[in-house]
Image (cartoon, rainbow, N blue to C red; front, side):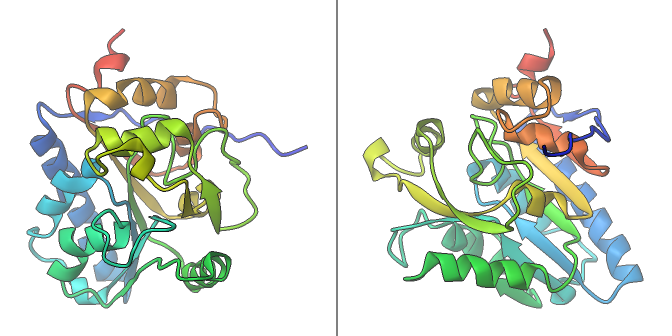
Length: 254
């Protein structure tokens, strides 16, 4: 029998008047943490999510002053299988345009599935494990997923990176977010960092705007911690912050 997951923290979410203000506040907090870490250690390792929910935060983060990006190493948390190398929906490409190519990172490690996704997953897991991860910047899916860990997710997953099959709700969200024109265009499979791997980070910043996320936010904060709503696992982390806009916070007002 697996040990019960224990809730460690339930931070009061920051609820902004707009997506833009949500992104700015999150970016300010992330920038402050980066500056503090870079004063006390030689380097910082970060994991980024690729999603429209992160756009406002990333746009603000890249203009924040006083950050030694040349001492920051970047990873990302998931990638589709079966898309061409230059497909605009690829998360690595999206993040390159949004932040990776716009700042002088020490290194950027893209999750490139290639022809052998299982070997890629193992190699990426080994690279992640070389040193602690300091910061994760993530969102929450409309179905409550973290990265591409759709429900029912294994919150005790023994591996760090794996191949997964995407559920219908997850694939539909990609259409609703206008990442794909048609549901049938969304890949069925992806590589993803697992929930336990994400929770190994020292600090988590979670940006979740939009009315389509209001129910997922409500369930993430109020449902029992379980793989039925993978994002409930965030409550087992001792140092995480949640940023919402007025639309995504609607479910918390009842």
